[in-house]
Image (cartoon, rainbow, N blue to C red; front, top):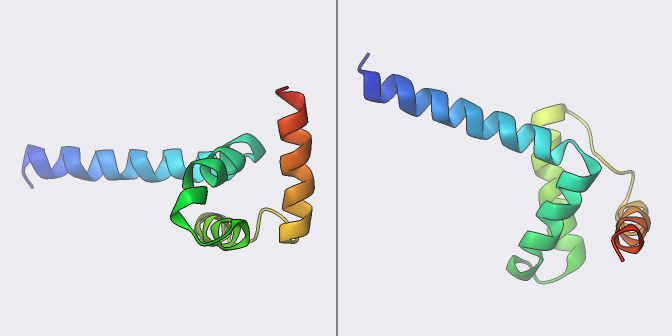
Length: 81
């Protein structure tokens, strides 16, 4: 295996680990939601796309529902005001 391939594999694992850690935290999940919101028709579809990423990495969903997420999002936004 070439050194380039080894480095590429390492970078991909690091990227996946960073994404796993980001989507696994409240702040990271919310940051992803806010960054990706414009890429989706509405907030619920954006939330569901990020939950799918969380499920792929962790085998469960981060929040019990979109409504539950919106409560956490509101709390987060009020903290940073």
